[in-house]
Length: 134
Image (cartoon, rainbow, N blue to C red; front, side, top):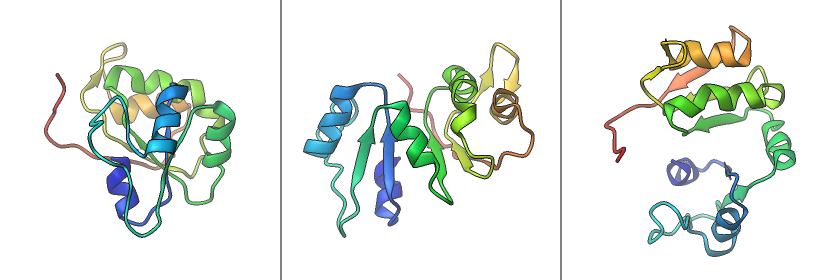
């Protein structure tokens, strides 16, 4: 997902909790955990950067016009948004790739995300396709 966003000419930052994974993305331009044989280097000078601290995430989310391309599994999505709701701008477009029901509340992702953020007017979009979950 990050590679596609960067190929489109967008500044692309991947937030992750694993500092080693973040360093590999920044230094070797590949993701050691997923599709590690493929380069994340994009032609034209666009770089995909990894960040792994809440301070960095807060700073990046303050960018005007930020789009959050959220790619966590369905059951982890609402808790992540609830935990980070105070740093997510009200006008940030959230594009969610998770599909399915949030089992804890039997909600579709859109309703579960809005409830987690405790706001009804957050711009949301959904990107779906075939599942490659193993």
